[in-house]
Length: 554
Image (cartoon, rainbow, N blue to C red; front, side):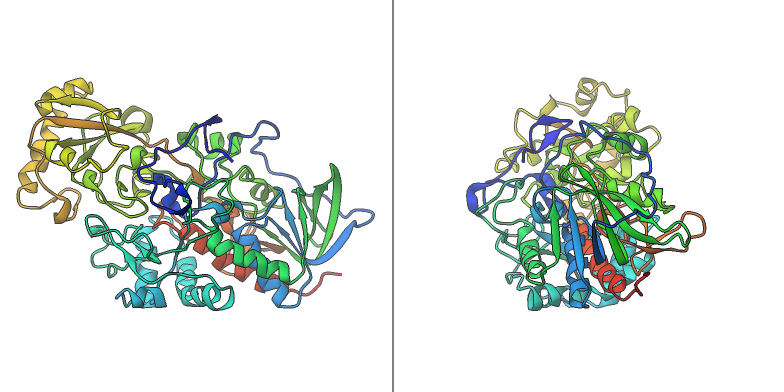
C-alpha cells in the first residue's frame, strides 16, 4: 500500500536504509502507530452519526461477543474474551488483519521497570511512569486512564513476551549524539529527557522496539523494525482459539434493543448484503481513527486537512459514528497527531535528536515558541490549535548556522534541496523569508545572549543542545506541520473500556471500545512513540475481559 499525501502517491524522504530488507525509515515511523498510508475516502465519506437499527426479524448469526476491527485493540479484546470462555465473532473491514498496529514502526510504550528497561540500566517505578504519562500527554489528559496504563504496564510486557513470544532484544538506542544501536529493544523516542518534566518524574526511556516480519513489507516504511513483531504473534494466538473471523465484512450499524436500550448486536455488510449478528454479551468497537474520512477531518481537525496521512484505508471513523448513533459521548475529537516535515528533530532514525537540535525553530513572524529538543510529536500540538495557525504557523523555519550545517553531512534529507534561504546575516535571512523587520534579529540576539552560557530561560532547551547561532552563512529549512496525521479523539470510555452516554456519562449497556476508536490516556499531546499501540493493547484487553464477564441479555 503506497503512502499518500492528500490522495497522491508519495512518501517521507528517507535518511538511511539501515534496516533489514533494505527499506528506509522515514520520520513518521517513530509514532509506533503507523505506517501505511491511505487516500481520502472516495465514497461514503461522512461525519454524521450512524443511527442504530432495531431488532431484526431473524438473526443471521450469533456470538457471545462481537468485535468490530481486527487490529491491535480488537485482537487484544478477542484474545481475552476467548480465554474467558466466550464465543467471539470478529468483523474486519479490510481483507486482512492488523490495521495500523501491524504496519507501525515497531514501537510500544511501556514502563514501570520492565526487564528490558532494567537490563539497559533504567530502574523505574510504576508511579514514575504514571507521573510522566500525566505530564507529557498534556492538558485534557485522563489521569485515571494513565493510572491504569501504568499499573498494567508490567503485565502487558510479560503478556507480550511470556505468553505471546514477542522478543525485545537487549540494549538501548540512546539520543543523539550518543552512538546509535539499532538492534536494541529499548529506544529513546519520547519526550522523557526534556527539561519540562524536571520535578515531575525521572527521565527514563519507554519505547520498546521489536523486529517484525521481513517477507511481506507492504504498507510499511520500516524494514525489519515494524509492528508485525508484536501483532503477528497475537494474531496467531487469537486464531488458535478459533473465533469466527469475517474479512471484508464491515460493521455498519449497532443493533439496539428498543425496550432496554442495550446494544445487542451489529449489522454488518457481508457479500454486499446486510448481515445481522446477535451479541449475547456485548459489542466491542475497535475500528480505528478517522484520518481517512475527509468529512470528519474537515469537521473535527480542519487544521490538518491535506496532511500526509498515517494509518490504513480502514481509518474512516466507522466505529466512532456507530457509537455516536447509539448516544455515545466523544472526547478530544479535535486533537490529532502530527509532526514537522523533514524529520526536523529526529534526524537520526527512530531516536530523538540530531544536529538540527542546535537550530532555532521560529514561526513565519520570526518568533520562537518551543524548545527545539522536544519529541517530534510535541510541535504539532503546540502550533496546530493556535487560533492564528494558518497566518503564523502553517510553515515554520529552522534557522541555523554554518557550524550546524557542517554537522549535517550524514543527513541526506537536509541538503541543498530543502534549504529555502541562505544569507550572510540574520537580517538578510529574515528579509529572504519575508519576515517582519527586526523580529528574527531580536529572536536570535536574545537566544545567542543566553546560549553563550548554555542557557535558554525562555523555553528551557537542554544545555547540551544550546549554543549561539553565530557562524555565517546562516540557513533556514522550512518545516511544515502538514506531515503526518492520525487522530486520537474517539468515543469516551471509562477505565473498564465501557462506552459512556452523552446524556449522563453512564455506561451504555453492552457497548465497549478501545484503540483509536476510543479516547483513553491522551490529552492535547502525544507522550512518545508507541503510546498508541500500548493503549490499544491495554484497553483492548480490559474490554475483552469485561465484556466476557457480562450476563447474556437473552
